[in-house]
Amino acid sequence: PFASKAEWELASFLARSSMTMKDVNDFLALQMVHLSILQFYNCLPISFKSAKELRARIEILPSGPQWQSQIITYDGFPTKSSIVLYYRDPLQCLPFLLQNLLVKAHLELIPKKNFRNGKHFFGEWITGDGAWEIQVIFLPRKRNYHWLKMV
Image 1: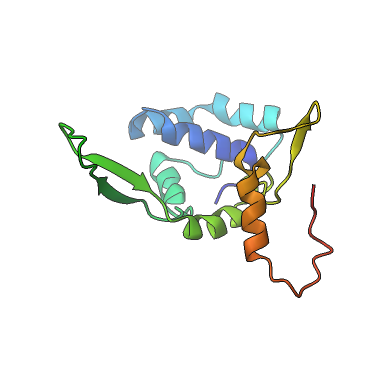
Image 2: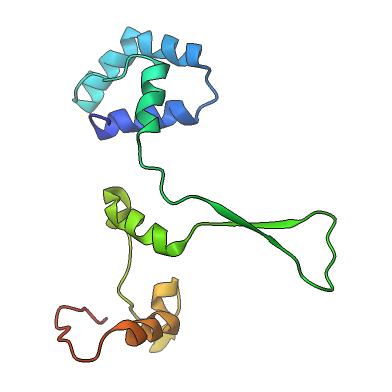
């Protein structure tokens, strides 16, 4: 719903700011803002003219999987208030992340092993033994996976 990366950055900044809708409208009415966008980013003018239009565009953005919660209790460890675990279903998150072009390029889905001074060096989860073990469990045995990159 946004015409360019520069417009998205502006929209994101305005949405996250503590500015009121009137402040956003006043800001968007400034000629300097429009001239700066045209001159420095060499792109189309801002396509939303008010805070209401901006909010409407933000509302149509995909929101991703819904947050869920669960109260956690642990026998023998009393707490003054409940411990609430907030989470999203990973099986719903993965398709959402793979469809997001901004995120997709940064996802590492292929297990790899890093070595430093001849020893296995662990960094991100994808460099650990667990990623390799899951890969072996889920890959069917009778297929040709010549395209699968093993590092």
